[in-house]
Length: 97
Image (cartoon, rainbow, N blue to C red):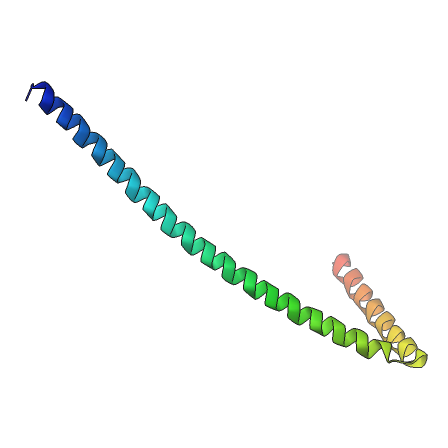
């Protein structure tokens, strides 16, 4: 097997094996990247739907609030202020512990 042709054939065979090994690794990586891409596409669609839903809710709330009278707005502000005061009391109690 000391024949130069045999040595060259062995070298070619070894290099071919290395290439096949690299090819399999690249295929595996490609498959994983495709899965990741599909997952990201799905997440993107889901987030877009959530954003659209929230935007619709915001729009509905703005329409609802714009129809409120001054008296209703004042009542709502007082309620919100009351809730904020209660939250601040709870936070101060939690911080005191």
